[in-house]
Image (cartoon, rainbow, N blue to C red; front, side, top):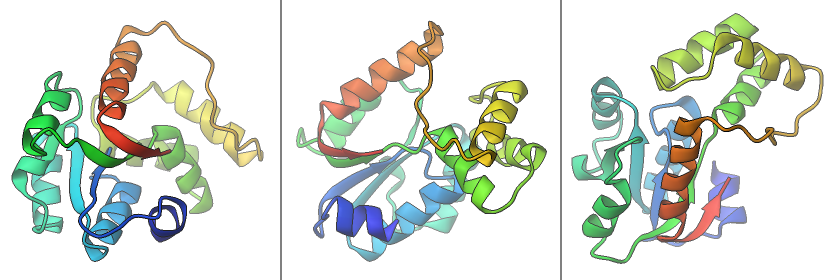
Length: 173
């Protein structure tokens, strides 16, 4: 997290950062570093339980800076909250990145699926997809590019992240 924020993104104190999936293990790491670097953190969660977890774990993060990921008003709410400035940095942690992280922790495919299911709730891919990626990463094929899909929810998520991307200065992926 430190490497990505300080060395790669060259963040400066008081810049704003949106961490997608702040409730996940990697999201928490980035939020913790962001707070230490005196950034203004925003994050997304998938449900109320995860929002409460973030509020408890990171009391420094304002409740108004924690958003539901699939809220169609997210870009508008961020513009309102930032007084039309937008976000300086967006950190999008894809589920595949979490799978890679679990590989490094020597987690099995089942353990990985259970951890990601706990983090993302209903917004997860199917079990066979996880085992495919787990197997691919475990065998050393670490590229994360996915084949294009016509899944409507994926298309909607892309549109949302494109809108958010238009509100920021730089993105870390």
